[in-house]
Image (cartoon, rainbow, N blue to C red; front, side, top):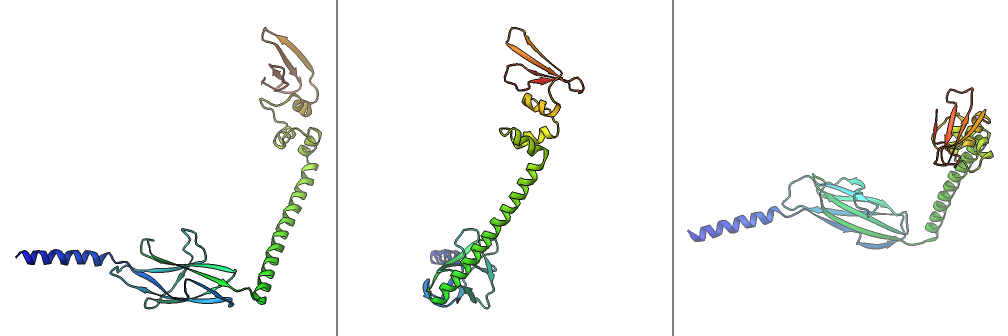
Length: 236
């Protein structure tokens, strides 16, 4: 009876071990690191099924970055053969076997070096020249747009104000051009909006000089500087 009990334990343990065997990804060709003069190669491999019965998906990535699975590969009878293009002198490919829930079961990395033949050097030069032309065209368009914006700004009312008061910010010049008033604006901004005030009064109530400027023809007519910094502290 004791022997039967031990046999049952062994069977249960063996079953548990088998149930944890993951599917494995095996690369048949090429080797992990090769060199070639060709502009493309085939990556061939197979999936060795373990005891895991969940559905597998294969992904090919041209990047070693985490979270970038890349393009999906279709496997027939657990076998796959995928053509890849060698765009650089050193090309990294990552093949990932992914489970139902996005878990990576197996992962293989292949590095392929492309030999610098005269034809490949020409191809690289043409690609770099095309990329450089594209960058230059983007920069040219950006500069043209900036110049167009600069001319339009200088012709605008706010731009003319900033040319006169170069230390004022663009935002403040736009607010002055729109005849806005706000706490903290400079006295000269009011002068730019309204002209010089109709009256100016200086008072001292024991806390230093306070200045009042008033424009009679405006609803908000009087503005106050309470500490002599020429910035508006209040108005009514």
